[in-house]
Length: 280
Image 1 (cartoon, rainbow, N blue to C red):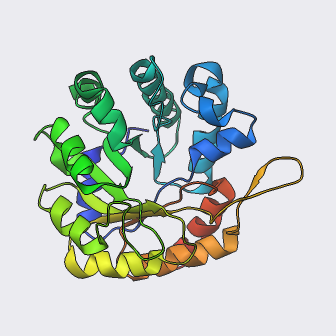
Image 2 (tube, rainbow, N blue to C red; image 1 turned 135 degrees about the vertical axis):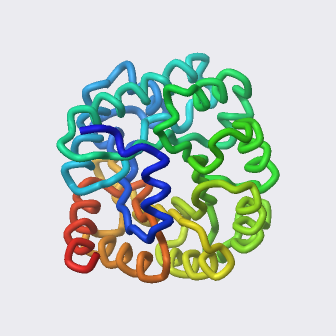
């Protein structure tokens, strides 16, 4: 099946479509034994794992998958690893029986560190069908600079999500409303939040976002603050049932795309997909 092209995706969201994204590919790689500081390198060292995770999220019901492209700030091979992550996602989608959208996930710091080369990769015409997800933003001015690096072309396919604390404020003191109103003026395709340190504040984030921003939005909460098991593995608080219920709440409050971040695996997405299918 063909790629769910970014332009068609944006049109679907504007029309009111409720879509489901995948979860935390990094934490899924960690479950498979990949070191936390080698997540981006998994694109070359554990290619099969990355492909498998994408496939599991798609089978679970995700409409969008996220390239393993986030991080790698200190890697001298970051740009080539990002490209490899894109290739793996493309390869996975090309073997699907339904159209799937692909998001290239990057942190603003990645763009600022590798200004010309990474921006050149992300804005290459061969990737026009992909969403550029600038995520886990903690500083408003840094976020603006990162978006500016990507240029004016195809701003509609740039999605931006902030990282907010329990009081719905970014690390630099920016409120939800300030973030949404400022970044919204840059005419990006969708805005919202991801990850976060509070288990139950995404309902508030969605309500406050949609009260001042009337374009498509995207929210990807994490699985809560993890604990360490006796065998050294991360354990997240949010169950698939809790996550699916939370997704329905976020959609009902106006979210366009809902997915997960750290600790949200295919089983969470499967539960959300099954519940969504009963209503939307």
